[in-house]
Image (cartoon, rainbow, N blue to C red; front, top):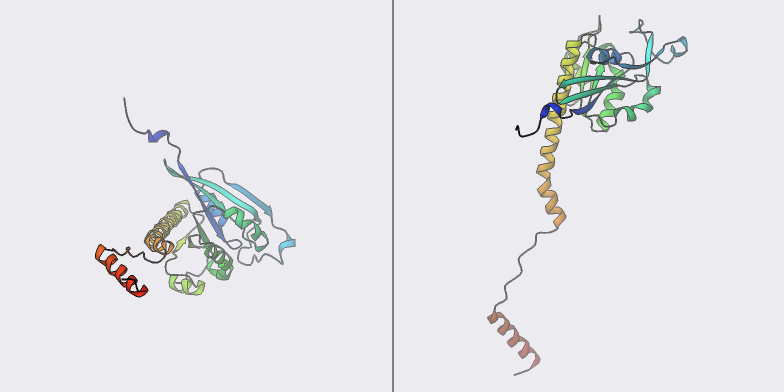
Length: 237
C-alpha cells in the first residue's frame, strides 16, 4: 500500500493579483491575453457624454471602457491558480478599487509612456496599502521608449520597484510580466518575514520590561551582622 499524501488530489493554492493603471492603458487587453478562461468583462460603450471626462487623445480607437472590473484565471501549475482582476481606469470608478484589490498579493500597474502622469493615482493607492507592485510599460505603437531610469525618476519610484517593458496584446510577454510580478511578491514577502523575525527578540525584550537582575544571596554571616547592627541601634546588648 502506498503511503504519504497523494498530491494529485490536493486542492491547488489560489492567489489574487491586480492589473491596474489609468484610462486606456491596456488592462482589459492584458487580462484577456493571459486568462485561460473567457475573461469576465464589465464594459460599456463610450459615448459623447464622456468626451469631457475621459481623455481619449492617444486611444481614439477605443470604443468601450471598463465600468467595474475584468476577471481572468491562470493555472500556473498543479499547485497554484492565479485569479487576475483588472480595475477600472477612470477616477469616477475609483470607489470600487478597495473591494477589487482586497486580499491581493500584488499588483501590476500598466503605464502608457505618452501619459505617465495618469499612473500616479495607482502608485499612491498601492504604496499607501503596502501592496507590492511592479510597473509595466505597455508598448503602444508610436509611444516613446524612455530610458527606465528616467521613468523611475519621473515616477519617484524606489529602486526596489521593478520596471519592465511588456505588450498587453502578446500572451507570452504578458505571462512573462506576471512571472516577474510573482517573483517580486515573493522577494518582498520574504524580506518582510526576515525583518519580523529579526525584530521579534527585541520586541519580546521590550515587552518583558527592564532586564531582571538575580536576587542577592543572603548568607548567615550577613544575617548575623545585620542583627547585631540592628541591636546596637536600638541599644539592646
